[in-house]
Image 1 (cartoon, rainbow, N blue to C red):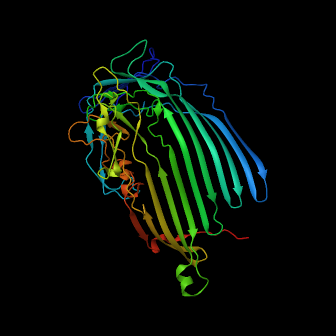
Image 2: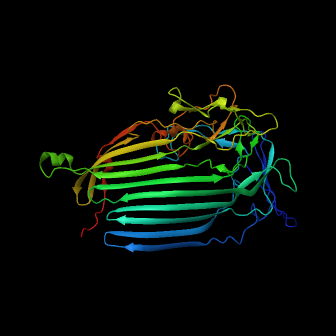
Image 3: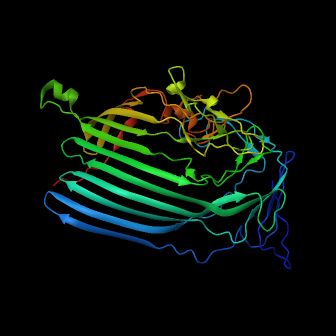
Length: 451
């Protein structure tokens, strides 16, 4: 599918170029560099790390520990050089794929879709360097008996992150996409955790994170407009909440050994039962609303609410299209990046199992599981097709606007993809109950010696 030109021993270009011809049903790659990477190798990537732990208090009933750490971490900086999508993709769809199978299922015939975006060249700007992140954290952990509580602060600064542009100040070439280091990010978080170890038949683990992620570019790949593939959408480089920013996140699990009587028929029926539950809850992710396929921002209509609420909308909420308007030609709308938010989500799973002791080294387990036991509906955020997190104000006829069109489980990933988890087993799906008979779960285990 690709070919490399013979390198010249007399003339070796100092910059890596890659041409992608996207017309027709074939493409051609031409590489004009010999033993050179996409960008100059950096020999000054100094990445120090430091960690300190201090036991402030060491008592018989409680202990207090302080931990701090920081470090500098470098990324590879590839930024889509080896995987950018300006050529024609050949796709294969799989159906009837067994869970966990990579090669199973029925494969369709390969389909190659021409991109028809002309000729583009991908190039690293002069002085392109490796992106890096400074990270630091401080945590206080307090234990009281079998219980432990910790409170921590986590921070990070991303610098020289990968961005792109269509032109340079000193020179520009038609059809060229330039990789640069213009993006940056920051992350601040408060992390709380409570852990009660299994002692008297109960184990509880709960974690809460209050965080804010800010950047001016969340994706190091340009967006291709779904309705006009010839149009390359450039991110506006506006500093705002990241595309993946979640302000509040709660996770937890509970393991409880159920009580039973000491003897008789009731003890035979109810002993060795254990109940388990895991749960999560999070606030909504941002939605980036753009005015049209060119990526311009819409104007905000004064007096109109951003959201509409009511039982007639999936999830009880919809973005109000009347609150935004298309700006005048040549002007920029006043709506910022990632101002809107989608849907939050929560789910509780539950399982009940009993162990049957068959011999010293043989155990048999019977298990009943329920996913999303309360059948709580979680909806995917309204978005353009194949572009989660981005919503276009003018998407053409036949498309609704502002309302959820699928549940969260279906919106987490594409269907019929090799290795993709079925939406039935994703978070945010409908209630699912499973009873596992004992025989298939026959397993061996090794018990630890007791004191």
